[in-house]
Image (cartoon, rainbow, N blue to C red):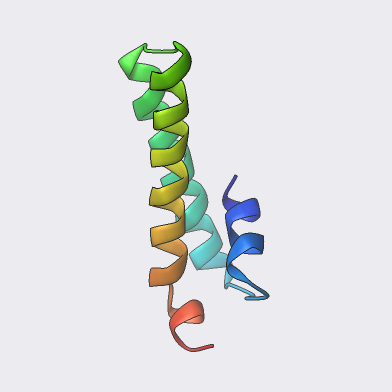
Amino acid sequence: MADTCLDLIGPTTVSSDSRISLLAIASRTMNNLQDNGETNGQTENREDDDRIIEILKAVVSSREYQLC
């Protein structure tokens, strides 16, 4: 998911440290969603949207994105 979000933002190459951070955010967000135990229709879709938003916010906050 983190790689897909990077592709959506544009042709930005991020450092391995930034990529690791993005993967950690994606993993943490996914774990938080699973801990909630809610997997029905609209709730699941909203949570997917929230996860994507969190990852995109992290991408645009990265040093590489800010300097391109």
